[in-house]
Length: 118
Image 1 (cartoon, one colour):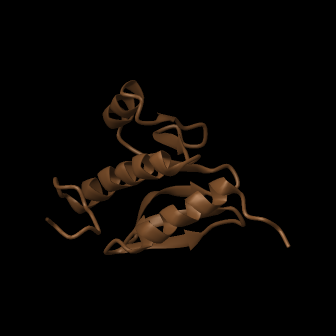
Image 2 (cartoon, rainbow, N blue to C red; image 1 turned 135 degrees about the horizontal axis):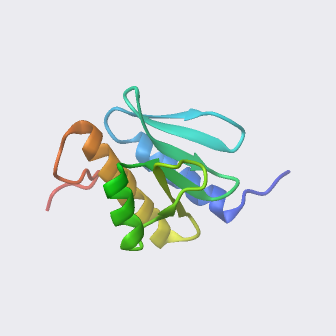
């Protein structure tokens, strides 16, 4: 029996949360990677083996995210950013990146949350 790495478990947790968002689906593209889509549009990629999320943003958004330390430039996507998933704080940070991309694709300003409003 193969043990699941901590990074893989965290990436699975991210995938589960993202799949609960309206219009979002998770599509396996390899043994370790999954494509996250909103309807037919790509939100990003989750890689269980490397414990990383990769997302595409416009040049100006990408530069802003990197400048503020919210993400690193992606080695896999020239127009994208990446964020490692090593602990609970990374889950929050990656969900914020996906939320930003999700709102952009939906044409919304307010962050999406599965939490009920207070």
